[in-house]
Figure 1 (cartoon, rainbow, N blue to C red):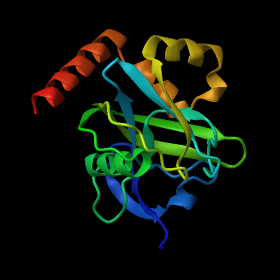
Figure 2 (tube, rainbow, N blue to C red):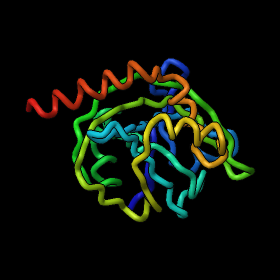
Figure 3 (tube, rainbow, N blue to C red):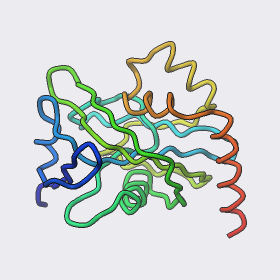
Length: 187
């Protein structure tokens, strides 16, 4: 299997080059594209996944449904999100784009994330079949309980999860989840 090549971008998300994934995450990191997926079930519970022990950055830390990178030569954010939900969770789930966020976070003296990250949301009641190379554990949690847990133990959660949740308005999010659930049931 070849090396994974990522899109390098400028602050406006314009592609400026390509680089190997590992090199993108060394030192302070090279700015590159990423995706992050938030999933809810029909009981309005949030899917938390624990990153596998094989991850270079933030192993065994709680995260959203999945996080990854669009691959060169032509994968866009949306196609990447759909692909990674299938590969990491073993399910198909309709997704809706929410927004992009820019963040940089250093992990010990190992490396950094330096990303423009497209955030997606989905509602799904399918049985999760986690890919053990990607996910060590998972659980469904009440969204309000999740926010309490993060406040109590912030070091147990990925920096991009915390930043994404700070940007979300909880009441608007619940309305969006209900709308997505209605749309899925209508299809």
